[in-house]
View (tube, rainbow, N blue to C red):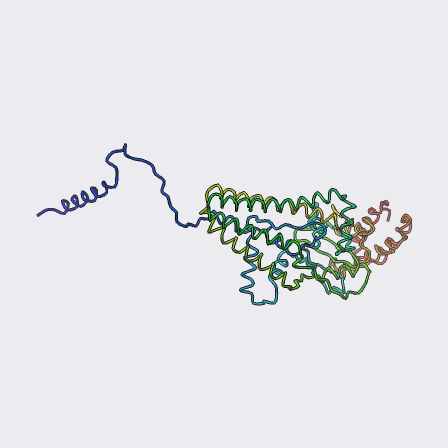
Length: 457
């Protein structure tokens, strides 16, 4: 009876003969061949077009607001992740629980940073100030570089006109940049947009010439979305809503913003301006034209994002590289456009009264310098530090505020007499409790040093 090993060897021989038929008889008959596959495939390469990009929401919000209309037109480019905002808008519209809030309002709200402040504006009713596209000129001031003592660093900015008219802003740009420079920067933004559109149109034509249906579809949808962005740029879909009835109170008020990174920004300005700033919101006025443009932009962007994944990998290699080149160009161009726009916005605001108080060993010295030493428009006259919770409720600090107010009330057209300052400082020391005399003496020394007098008290 045959053994089990004989059956196993026979089975292996049969399998070997079957496999041998699949190979050539000799090594000389071997030839390398590429497998052709005409099926539809999907690949992560197309995801590059819809990767998350934090700059996209800001760019789309600028497109919808066009706050700087009259100065320049903001172009929304087809950069990496550029189709995410319209896709999110569509999802928000289909899935929103509060459908009376337009998705474009939420888009602009995402770009708005609420500054938590302590203020005496309207009796401390307003404790937040919105920082958004309408006051981008404040960005560099708020993000100031601190010293080695960031807790004692102040920046004071005088907010005299938060929302200026278009004519006033154009006048400021002409005065600070000149007509030629303004036109060149404005044309540079327009050229960035036109180049982006030309690249997409060229890709669509190449797709036709190369009989590549996938490439044609992709570039056609992106060209449609670019065209929708251009149409939207000719209007302001979302506007700043300012309250109609605000009391014309020109008394200076203060709003103090303490940064998490260290350093304090103090906004000084008329009650009317600061209240208008605090109460400003985004507004979308529904019209047939606006709704049609919104849906055109939303749907074209959504289809473009979907086609990025479905079409790109099935395109010819040269057109894939061309599309990636469009994404890279748009991403870099958006950074350049942001710098140009920020420069124009700052110049359009006109002269900005802002002053820094840095390198202070103590907080009291910073307060004294900000009250007596900096630019007169920015001096903190009438700011109640104790009442706003910025200093401990101690007698010495309450008396310090009175001392600084008395010195500030001295006639500004003449030099502050040293004898009068010494007299007020002596009265200050006499009115402070004995347990706080050491701190009071330090404050007096800081006052005299700030005014340039010798420490003789």
